[in-house]
Image 1: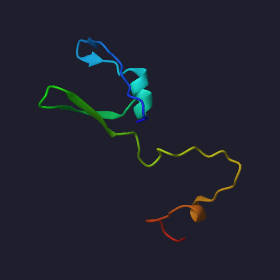
Image 2 (image 1 turned 90 degrees about the vertical axis):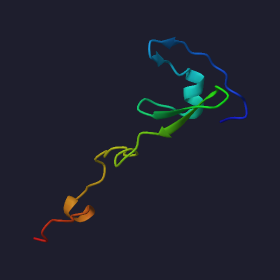
Image 3 (image 1 turned 180 degrees about the vertical axis):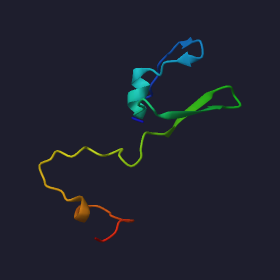
Image 4 (image 1 turned 60 degrees about the vertical axis):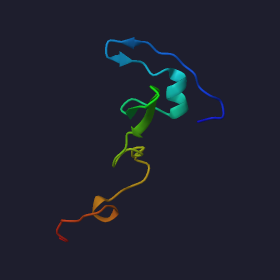
Length: 83
């Protein structure tokens, strides 16, 4: 987090609340992220981002078709016959 404290207020509606924009931006929280909530002994709540979207294609920018590709030589062919 930056050197400045971030204070923000949100309203609980039913069982949901909105994470204020300033907090989401500061912590880089995006749709699909998971949050862990912990109630401290002094009744304060600690929330941390525990998972951000990721996986095999998380950083894949796509193929722009400017360079030729040959799947038989450019990619893993594990489990395929060498014919």
